[in-house]
Image 1 (tube, rainbow over the protein chains, first blue to last red):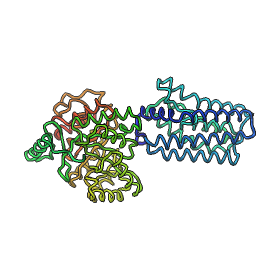
Image 2: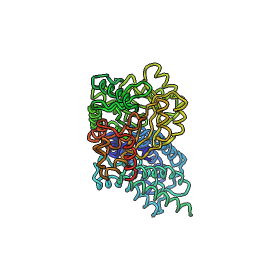
Image 3: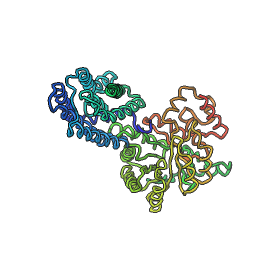
Image 4: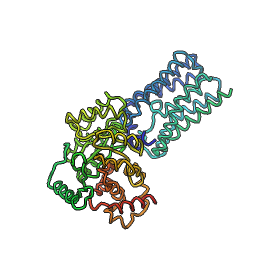
Length: 214
Length: 308
């Protein structure tokens, strides 16, 4: 595992600080898009599924390009294939949920929507709170919809906001990424980076178990 | 830039080594007035026995503060007689940061530049070689190695052509973590190479059985990576007191103890500890000075570390 992480934890954190400083408008846009999508889903708007799909796809593609390929690749050769997979996930999400309209929102299924909403807030606030609690500079926090760990958690949250088994395959890459992310954080001793991928894994597995049982 | 200048100090060291070889019949350790150098078997050129690795430690990206901090490490390395710097395209921004440091220091005297080609694609390997020249700011590399034996057949051909053209002085192959020793042995037997790089330290001693004797037999220089097991070994031994007899091995601290064990093997040319800190660089480079352990002492050192 350590052969795939060719940098120290402080260098990794410093990279996030620079990435956040250089791309902060993207974070603002990601928050706006996320808020619009969530309101549409909770209100049961007719196009809510498509809006959610395109919003999520934007997060995947942006993070794959701006974070992995343009930023992280300077430190880690593995970033380019990871970035390509993030972009591929974004394209598939846009096709499946946006173009083909297979995202049927779960408005009315209160419990599922509440879990999805809670996970979105965890993706928004979780890492900044942990960053502060662990005494790290706040500018190194992982932004909502612009950092891999938050995007994977948002993707699982989105699956709680939509209905059915037909979308479960979209959880495969978030689960694989979260497992990798968790192992990386553990290897580097970056304990503040553990909870988000752990949440992603737990809630993805739980969702799959529930929907496949029905 | 690519050759160690033969100044008075090095000349005296070389003379002492030749004299030592003549008197003892042992492989030459050119423990000169202050720096331990060892010979590259194919040419007899001597290089300092302690070099510097860049895996993880020099991969700091574009962070200027960290780049400047690594430049200080580099300055201490040269100040204390260091020569070989080893890197790879696999190590993220490490090559760029080495180049940044060399440029900042404004000197490459004494530098023995070593990097690698690491790609499954032959044409991409040629691009990597050019990239390395640009990143280091060097026209000629002292050593280019095929990283982890990846596509070694094609890359060795490319490296041989570069060597024939005078753009590379030595060529070699690498492994690490004790892996692919069988493949390395096969190449050492069948190909004309100048260097091998492998993992060897006080607890990872598999290379002693076949590869190190074969290197001596074939006249191949040996670079030892992971001397501290990425810090795990040094962290472990430093929880224990240094044995009183370590002074007889020429070791005043644990880094010197571990590094002197490695470079005192007759077949070993150089080891490449990596660090982010000037104070650790000072400790590492301390192993270039003072007496080196003999075979009896080496056995005692390995046994002691193995029992910790």
